[in-house]
Image (cartoon, rainbow, N blue to C red; front, side, top):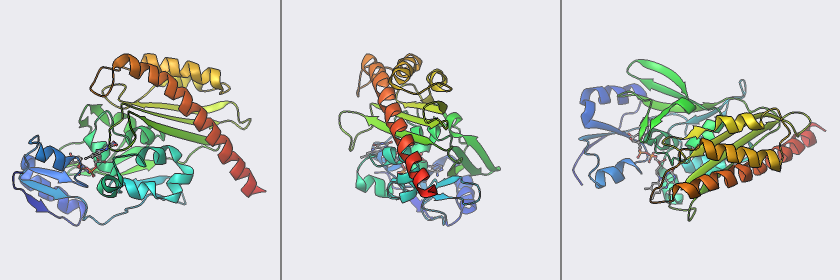
Length: 301
Ligand SMILES: Cc1cc2nc3c(=O)[nH]c(=O)nc-3n(C[C@H](O)[C@H](O)[C@H](O)COP(=O)(O)OP(=O)(O)OC[C@H]3O[C@@H](n4cnc5c(N)ncnc54)[C@H](O)[C@@H]3O)c2cc1C
């Protein structure tokens, strides 16, 4: 491996100023599970690696008690998110996704920010965070800005970050009442493999517990970037959610997909699995919304 200098700034400003000093010869590194692989394979050859792991900040997801927003720091490891009771209980779609990334060893070091900035179509964490209407907070040489995660991905390996900018956190707005959600990573095996397909569905129900108030259908590896199947969502919203409506939504999502053949799977199979898994995740989200509502009613008694 080509030698490089490893820099350990303690603040965001220090990291940005180091990046500005070294320009294209520098690369940020968080957990290093993508960067170091690329360096070893000779796809990257930075002279300086600027570590983001020494920057003091939140390292666990937390709920702002005043706004009800969930904050997930970009430097949170997948393992810290997986082990968060808050995420397990209230944001199962995110828990479903992070718990199957790589292996425990990978999840102990790999960060959610690195997963998003790496911007591969198969990034497991992208789908739930888009489904949850997450926003990316970004800090850089020109200051702070925020962008919807749904617009963050520009193409395979490309995201909306300018030189020197750092993704600092993802902010998730308060969940509507009676919401359930679910994600599945589909592949030949669950561990140590990138998904052939990632499917996430979020459903919020009206008071009758049948009619859909809000739907999110998000897909990964079904197009060059993670995306929302808007027509499928529209098909579910405002109507009773049941097996039939979710079957139709799956078929619509299949038509919205821009699947292709790759080493992990062929296009026709991916499209068929979009249909099957949108329905399956929709039913799981529905079941979770109903179970959550029962819990809430019980605590109100
Ligand atoms: C064996 C193995 C299995 C894997 N399995 C999966 C899997 O199942 N699912 C999956 O989605 N991924 C998987 N991955 C990919 C990888 O682990 C994840 O993408 C991981 O989340 C990357 O995070 P990291 O902190 O290691 O990123 P790094 O390698 O440190 O960085 C990745 C990229 O993001 C940039 N970067 C990192 N953090 C920031 C930030 N906050 N702001 C700006 N730029 C930043 C870096 O400069 C670099 O370009 C796997 C990798 C390996 C090696």
